[in-house]
Amino acid sequence: MADTQADFDVTVIGSGPGGYVAAIRAAQLGLKTALVEKWPALGGTCLHVGCIPTKSLLYSAEVLELARDGARFGVKTGDVKLDLQAAHKHKSDVIRRQARGLEYLMKKNGITVLPGHGRLKGPGKVEVTAKEGAKQVVGTKNLILATGSVPKMLPGLKADGTRVITSTEALTLEFVPKTFLILGAGAVGVEFASIYQRFGSAVTLVEMLPRVLPIEDEDSSAELSKAFRKRDIQVRVGTKVENVKVLDKGVEVQVSSEKGGKETLKADVVLVAVGRRPVTEELGLEGTRVELERGFVKVDRQMRTGESAVFAIGDLLATPALAHVASHEGIVAAETIAGRNPHPINYDQVPNCTYSEPEVASVGLTEQAARARGHRVRVGKFPFSAVARAGIQGTPEGLVKLVGDERYDELLGIHIVGPKATELIGEGGLALRLESTVEDLFQAIHAHPTLSEAIAEAALNLHARGIHL
Image (cartoon, rainbow, N blue to C red; front, side, top):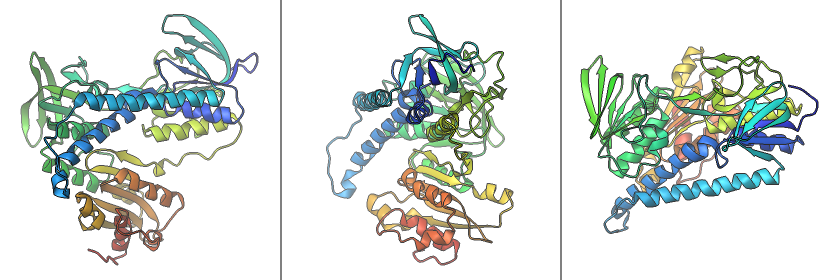
């Protein structure tokens, strides 16, 4: 990138949780900053067709289930029904407010927003093509690529938005399918299973790998599978999709497994949730020193690509495809550009959160990963069924599992399945960051009655000092 006649010190392409955070941090550090966004509103995939709308529908499903179950808590209601249109309106209102908030943050920090599609146009230049086709070229000393990802499709299959859909279309369905088949049991798959089962669909999950949420600890996967089966969500693991046939009134999916052989599954709607791919096309990377590996952009620990003044963050990288990871990577890139020498990210300490019912969250090493790294592992568990607050709320499913090192009592990982797991995991993230021992967790006094007591009790059980079990 050229260092002279530049309009901006930093230009960021993409305004998702990585891009807009990078832009704000760069501006805070006194760098003249521009943010390029091709969508009509700021926020990227996370805000418009990802994290935020999905969690909004999940909350609508939670409220619906609680209202239906109100009588057990002494609250009698009438005929409880889903108003899908109102749920979509609530979702849209949340998105609109968040997008307005981002516009305000750009103005507050003096960031120039350039609407349109951004791409490299030679050293030190970015071409921005507006929706109407008008083009402008701006000079920039540094560039941060934050263009995110899009849903993958199975080979030879196309989404039609009606019978075969991706997570994008699943957020705007105007009806509740009677039968709903989900291909892929990662975070996206199990979250939509939790939404539509409570909305009234008969849901089947198909996963090629041996268990749901394959990146989580095996005990967490087993606990979620058990909870799903109680909710009549059919779970087919170790099952491969052989063929998908779209019919006039539904979809037929041929699957095979070692245990069950071949069979045909039928559904009104099929959701393909087999992962996401980075958006690297049409960025002008051809002829540059920016390298790709398996489709992902290669960077160093400061997010710098093979081009010294070009950085990449978020879903473009082969790092956890999570909004909070992208935000931290954006901060690292911005502070590196400003000469701040930021601490590299410790990816072992990234929290994973799945907002299914029950929720699943983790931070640190799984038991299997800890053993593979040579640790002498000790494990402590505690079920939410023995926690008073969980009983009060009527949410007894799930457990807390701690993974520790026997020699120094080092805390290696925390895994939670159950109520508010995605909130409780914050304690685990802080404990790992502060290099806590397992004993530190139970010596820290946890208030009663709270869900967090399960963490302290799991720590006690790891030391064979359990009180309430």
